[in-house]
Image (cartoon, rainbow, N blue to C red; front, side, top):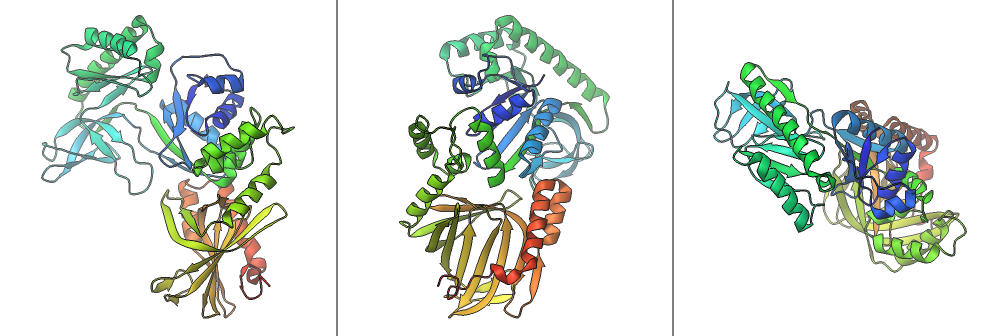
Length: 477
């Protein structure tokens, strides 16, 4: 059984999902233990699931086989996600060969992959023992190496060439730190090897930690011996699997449902929390839970009514466009032109006045200051349209295909699916960037479900493209 530790704003939902799939939850918070009715278990984890700096992503990290299983299950169950996983393990140890050299850095061949090492004193052709400091996940990310490689265990990691004691941020009790430091000093003093205590170390006794230190020290000696016997690049020790899952609005709705089986959860819970409304969501759920007959089902009407009312009080709306590459674009703000709430849908029209010259992507039409983009957004819809006008004359419409937008009283955020449709005043209709969608699907960044979602949306639009063109003189009569 795989032991998993879960942290972050998605922890209840992810924990419930993994528990249903047969994983064992360890080092769970008191709240998770209560909600899922699981026993306290302080066993060391095989994999960790936690937030990244991007609130739309979760990171999976841990021993290669076990963490990969966790990653694959999350992708399979959430379906509508982006995914990035490194081809090379974080903290893996290699005997490399220097193949390129600059004044103070070099490129090291690891036997199929090349990494960047700084500083580098060796000449081209020299053998060098290195660890993976940064494992690239996305295109154009650099594989960064270090001389101070780690041997990662369940409770500790030994650090070559950095003889100091460090602790996980989750170990903060001074008495625990003192106990662990004493063990490390007794085992490693004078060895030139450092040690990092992982969070699970605070639950282990002296004998358990001593045994793990001894085991890793023996592995360390074997690595040093192997590197003396090798001439060509070779991997000497495994590291950790690392992967990131990008959560679209659809995936977050799935997580809402998992969370709702354990505690009161309003609709759009995870979308609102990931967009900075955590306190408001907690307050609403605390107030509503004793009064609501279910665990938060059918609260969508109330949530969208609240957002619609607050939007009408807002002068500017921030627009966040998230690309499948992980890049986050902040578009020119829009002024609220119209907001309508009807049939459990929120329809928003923003007016964006162009401030600079250029070319409208896909349309090939000159952009001039003073042009107006009427941007139409609807909850639950994979379609956002940009309708460009100059002095009342329609210049064309760019139909952006994405997962349904996430909306708060001040922000509209959507995850782009790359392929788009352009409608010209001449009647010409053109599909753009379809090859980018296909490429990312082949690379595995976009799941089959997301790919088919985008393709089917294009087919829907092509049935009647003019139906998606917004005319402020007609649509809002």
